[in-house]
Image (cartoon, rainbow, N blue to C red; front, side, top):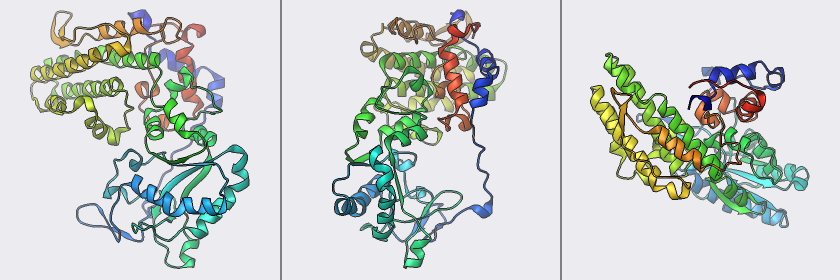
Length: 436
């Protein structure tokens, strides 16, 4: 299968040799913060157990947003703009959007937050008026005791109660008034005008961002956000199959290294390899469950909530408990076979054939590996022959070939778009294909 893969240096060289891509690339410099620029909430303080002490009880952020909408936002819109079409939603970044927030989340960006989406024709006309109405008519606190205003600074906004008009002048609400098109352009780099996403779009979009759009909560919808969320809820079938193939490809190239490293006495290297292969198996569980993974902080938490691994988490944890590489490899093989069984349980939906998940010796060596090739071949056969993905280089989506936070968190980066475009257009560009 060596002819089916583009090597990373070939792709990188193609991009770096393109003046147009490099000229258009726009990667903002990271913000460097000093200790003096940190912000401490005026009504909270750290205490012994590392959580935040404040004068109101913790509520899940989505519940706070619901109360915020019904008590503060909806009454203003009904009174002053009764005929305005809008959508109110809590999406975007934030642990609360995914239901992972707790009291430790309250020190930054947490609280009474909302997006108000307007139609393009209304946005410029009423945005300023809505902003002023929210500034002057929001209550200082909601019925649950949580403030509606924030102190914004050079790091992240923190909630603060206003006790007098002078205080309020120094604070702001955390309601973003925008259009769906502007939001998607900023958040996904997608100039949405009612069209369906392309294959290029799906491969470029960072999966955590897709998750925070399709989850979260919509409280009122005149603009069509819910329909869009249905469109973005999961990958088209051929993209789904292709991404599973690419995840198995990553395992294929390194499954034997757990044993090989251990065999030469590199215990640390063997453990690192096992952890990496385990992560790839976890990603396969997300893919086979049709669930977008989260970014690193919540990856394990989100994984533990997948229906398919209920009662099976110990199977994954046992891999880390073994000291000798043979036992470690044996436990990892059980994980491979579990994931293989999960694939077989989904094969009718994937329109793919059954694969025996049993791990076998690696080319006669004393290491056992899963039948990665078999899964890859079965799924590639199931991809529509007319799809560009049928014979595309097995590089995958941005989350499969890029780990740099500075790249995947800038969706409008032309450098990243150029990378994906190069993969899709490999044959057209005449790129040589090398062995993986």
